Length: 113
Figure 1 (cartoon, rainbow, N blue to C red):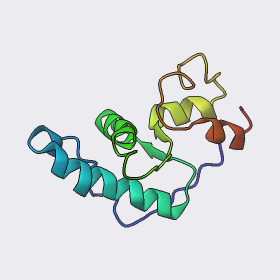
Figure 2: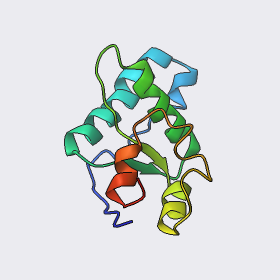
Figure 3: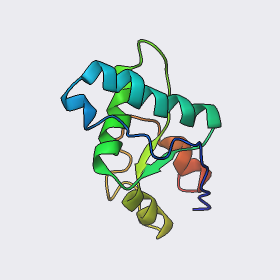
Figure 4: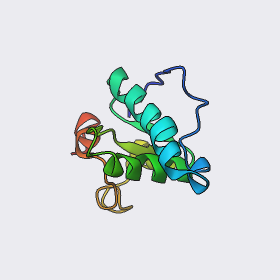
């Protein structure tokens, strides 16, 4: 896929999934939004995570934050990136169906869209 690791210094900052069970508004603003802003400012093509909770929180967090800002950062699970790298058809494993973030550009960039 030609994927390249880009660090933003916030790799250890929680996405906000666990704190959201106690204070969702705090978590959305001070965890989820902070991560999304950082990734958007870097201008990366996508954020890849091995964590299913991070995937859900960052993906749906973008939807919830749209009234404040549009992040449009594709959030991709590590297993999905591996499947793409192995040449699996993105439609066969639902890559083009369930994402709320724009994955079309990622597929185009790696020659699958």
